[in-house]
Image (cartoon, rainbow, N blue to C red; front, side, top):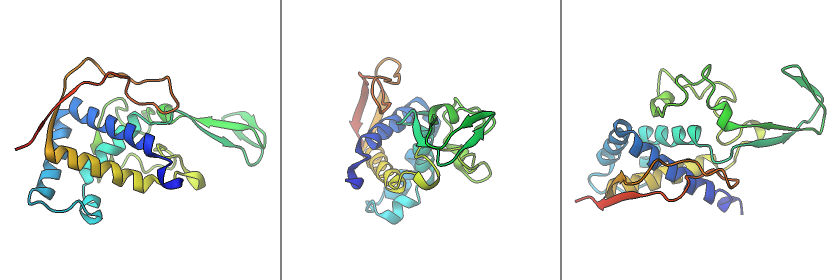
Length: 195
């Protein structure tokens, strides 16, 4: 069950990654260039080759930062404590929102902008403890996070290596009606096979 627990969140994140790349042509070109350079000769999509797709991984992580599939994470307090002047008793529920945390301009420079470079050398804005919580954090961090990133990188690599895409519809908004925050339908994208 654990292997398939995140299939919906992964598909939503794949959609948001592609949408954000199409909205941001500079990053789309960089990711596509990285993918074409790696797979131009028909190399297999192996674990080793996918692991090296740093631009692609940055694009996925940034889509997750801006569009976290889960808007709230709940935890039960294990002991009495005080948080920012509020008394929290053992057993109380504490909620944190990745969507809010990921827009903190003290952590993420220009937080509303899609910027996959923020995870690269010299910036690494996600390294501050509990700054980047798309998969939760601490002992209860999603155990499938590495698999999810690899899975999404694989899908993006295959799609961008084989097809050209462009947005063909109106502005795409977040659908807040479900537990997982995906793009609100309809999502119109034109595609054609690469020659």
